[in-house]
Length: 106
Image 1 (cartoon, rainbow, N blue to C red):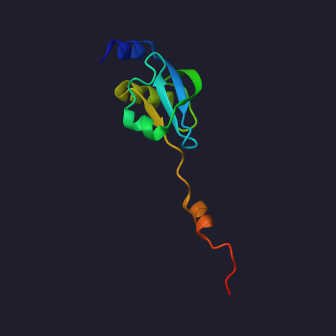
Image 2 (image 1 turned 45 degrees about the vertical axis):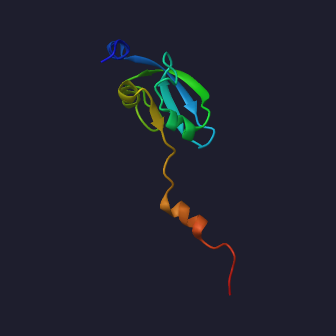
Image 3 (image 1 turned 120 degrees about the vertical axis):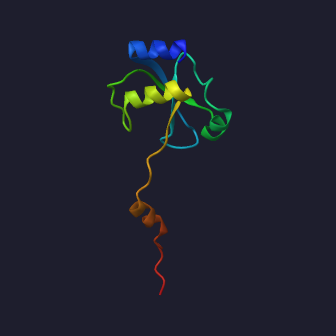
């Protein structure tokens, strides 16, 4: 465990910067603000697009986020150096609306 990870775990807080993807709606990248994007793999950044800073927040283990928890985000950042939040999966019935023919054929 690195000194930074120990520091983060001991205090139970993480100053986190959240970036949104210009290519994929509702895709976000969470990183330790002190390290920035240095630990994010280049291949991921290429697919993600040029990160746009969306917000900075103080994460705690008990923080509830839209699709996860502060504890989960902190754990993954500690292990990998970043947390990638993917867009929600589309429901099958919504996809069927796009597959349904819109023109009447007789």
